[in-house]
Amino acid sequence: MFKKLEIVKDSNKILREKSKEVNFPLSSSDKDTINKIIKHLTYSQIPDLSEKYDIRPGMGLAFVQLGMLKRIVVVVHEYEEGKFKEYVLINPKVISQSKEMIAAGLGEGCLSVDKEIEGHVLRHARITIEGFDVNGEKKKIRAREELAIAFQHELDHLDGIMFYDRIDPKKRFYEEGEIRFL
Ligand code: NI
Image (cartoon, rainbow, N blue to C red; front, side, top):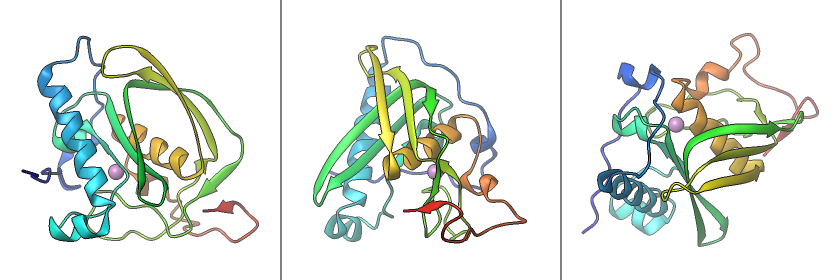
């Protein structure tokens, strides 16, 4: 039976802490948690199921959002309508990023933040990240556009950074032409 995850909310100070590197082999409980996150995020993006289980749509989650300070992120990307690809990265590190910046036109959301926060969050348009998969094998991911935004958002969680920290209070919104919007 499917049981939705209990996600830590923004008022909890743990979200401001730095997560710690994970040692391999991964515990079976961490593997189990990863699978639960994948299921939760996938269901959340399928309208019938997100309604049925009352889960807010989300693309990514970091372990800290379940109260565990471990450097593990999961992203589930709908690359084509109804088709999902899952990414699990452990101890991820950014190895390169584009100069070009983009932003989600409607701003970003977070499963730990219940209210909408308006403003554009600048992100690199393309990013390469290295890390490990669940088996401890080295893994390199090149992400662009929406997927690049999702990874930057999740990697920030590992360092206690929330998306709204990156909204410039003096310039909450950008104009067309200043940066590229998705
Ligand atoms: Ni988030």
